[in-house]
Each structure stands twice: as C-alpha cells, then as structure tokens.
Amino acid sequence: MRLSSRFVLIGLLLCELAAAEAPSASRVDVMHWWVSAGERNSINAMRQHIEHQGLVWHEEAVAGSGTNRFSDELRQRVADGKPPMAAQAIGYDIQDWARQGQLVMLDDIAREQQWDEVIPFAIQHLSKYQDHWVATPVNAHSTNWLWVNHAQLTRLGLKQPDTWPDLIAMLDSAKAAGLIPISIGHEAWEHTLLFESVAAGAGGVEFYRRTFVELAPNAQDIEMLQLIFERMSQLRNYLDTGFSERSWNQATDLARSGEALMQVQGTWVNGEFSAHGLVPGQDYDCFRFPDTQGMMLLNSDQFILFKDYPAEPETRDMFVSTLISIDLQRDLNIAGGAAPARVDVPRDQFNACGQQAINDMRADNMRRTIMGSIAMGNAHPAPVKNALYQVITDHLMGRISNTQAVTRVESIITAAPRP
Ligand code: GAL
Image 1 (tube, rainbow, N blue to C red):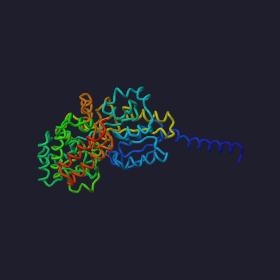
Image 2: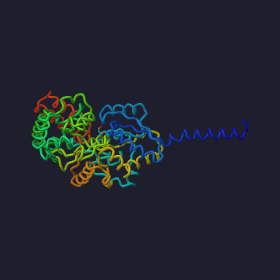
Image 3: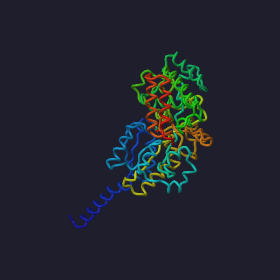
Image 4: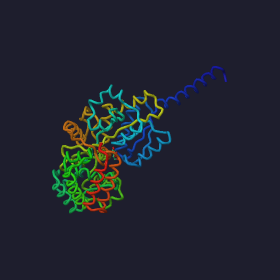
C-alpha cells in the first residue's frame, strides 16, 4: 500500500472511531412504560423531537402503567448502579426518588424557561421537591371521563349523562340491549380509577381534597364513604364479567368495537382511539363522569433525571428543554390524548376531546379544582395508595361489605401521616 493511501485509511478509521464515540455524548437513555398503540405514538413523538435536536435516542420500555412492575425494575437498575438517564414517573413517586437524593435538580432551566408561569399549580406541586424542580411534566391526563361508543349511544337513543341517576339509567339500557355496560381491566389501579370518579361525583371537591389529598376527613366525610361504596356495589352489576382477564387497553378495545357501551378511564383512551383512526363525535364521545364536571382528577406523566448517570450537561439540558417545549407538548399530546402540561400550547390541532381537556385544565387551574388522581398516585404517597388499592379491589370483587370497606379506608387515612 502506498504511503498516501495508508494515511487515507488511518484517516477513515479515525473518523469512524469519532463517529462511534459521538453517540455516547449525545445519547439519551430513557425508561418508560408506554407500550399500547396510543402510548407508542406518544413516545414516537417524543423520540422525533429529541432526535431532531441531534440527540441519540435509546429507550427501554417496561409495561406497567406506573405500577410496581415498572418501579421495581427501575429501582433494581438504580441499585445496580446503572440508572437510565431519564425515567417516566408519576405522582408522589417523584418525591420519593428526590428524597433519596437521586435526582438532578432542574431549577436553572426551569427559571430560564419560566416553568412557574406556565405549568398549573397542581402539577408543580408534584414536580417539585422542597421547592426545587426535580421533574419535567409532559402532559396533564385526567381520569374522570366516560369513553362512550358513539354508534351504541345513538342506537340506544342515549345522551350525555349529567347526574348519577342518568348514568344508572344509561347503564340499564345498555344491559337490557345485551351490551357490556362498562368495560374495565383487572388491575387495582383501574378499579381505583373508577372509585375516584364515583367518590368525586358523590362527595364533591372539598370532600375529595380533605379526604384523599389532605388525608384529614371530618365525620361527614367518613359518612360519605358509605354512599361511595354503595355506589361502587351498584356499579358491580354493570361491569364486564370477564374483567379479570383484561388489561386496560383490551377493555378499551371492547368500548371501541361496541361490545361495551363505555369505559371509565383516563385521557389515554383518547390516544388509544386516535391510534385506531377513531374520531370524537363520530365514533366515540368523551363525557365527564357525572357530577364531576368542573373537576379534573390529574395524572401528569413526568420525566426524572438520575444524578448517577454520566450524562453531558448539554445533553441533559437539551433533553429537558425539548420535553418542555410547546412543539413537543403539542405533538406528544395530540398523539397521547391528554392536555399538555403547560397552559400556553395552542389547541387548534387537537381533536374535540383534547380541546375539551385543555379548556377544562385551564379553567380548573384557575378554580383550583385540579386534584391528584388516587389511582395514579398523584393524590398522596404510595403507601396510602397501595393500601387503598387493596380495599377497593377487595370490595369490587365482593370480598368485603360496604361497611367493612368504609372502616378500612377510614383507618388507612387516619393512620397516614398528613402531607
Ligand atoms: C398511566 C400513564 C398514562 C397512561 C396510563 C395507561 O400511568 O400516566 O400516560 O399510559 O398509565 O398505561
């Protein structure tokens, strides 16, 4: 080989080495639980925006909707000294990681980009630990919705239910017509999600806040629990009898095909339906759970960054700024079905359910009626959530009476440390 061609070869090799090394500086390692069709669309939107900034995307998905299945895996990685750069997190789990001193503080970037001005208070409360930003919120899901099959609604001559009796009448006609009135999946968080809508509808904002957020119910609030469990018992008669076999998105499929009239679930169902090409007002309707109009039970997906991951500060900053950007929040939430986590994202490209979610979030932020979802761990710390899961599922499965359920909830709440 001539000397000059040897130089060319060495030059090429060096270039290749440099190219092989480049990704490590700009690589983002992201752990999340978004695996259903609509959720994949959200993650793809995130990936596109991240890659557009020249970062190299690497992801690990662990299904589990924020449950222990996901958190155990994340905890294991952290314990093994191999945390991801960023992980999806919801509710009080964020505080828990921050308390352990694991998280990167985001105050500088938050100040620079004025997060305090554009993120609703109820979300800030969950994204901050001891007044420091430790998480980047990407959406504002809410759980108090009915997702109704439009063809069945029309066929049965039904309309939006306003109150509890309206809902029961609607479920009765679905049952008489041989439909599954409400589809639901097998996990405790899904049962709790139904419970929280029933609770908020029966007891109202102040009851919900005192009992489940402040963990300081008064005597009337405890009495109210009796009515709530009576209503849950009533709903038992309308649930899909095969629910112990189903995941949340298989339950969504039943509402999509019209085998079920409706599913009571979070706005991620809007993402799921959209991923299958369905359109609000034509194929499905989104109604606030009766008597919860004017309230938003919140679940905000957020991303936390681990201190012990050897990231370049510029890569971290770029990642975080991209997640909070108006453009990403628009595209991610058009795909995922939620409202964005910031109040200033233009709503014109969202579908009708997305637009309603955005309007509700803006109004409820001003009214201070955005409250954390119990089911998704946004209302109180995980030990209380897990204890409530157990009672609510035991009750829904008919293993305990209404009165036993009330006594157990009362003792969980009164024994819990006040936040
Ligand atoms: C939640 C998550 C939502 C949605 C849902 C169902 O925990 O915050 O974004 O993915 O689970 O998997």
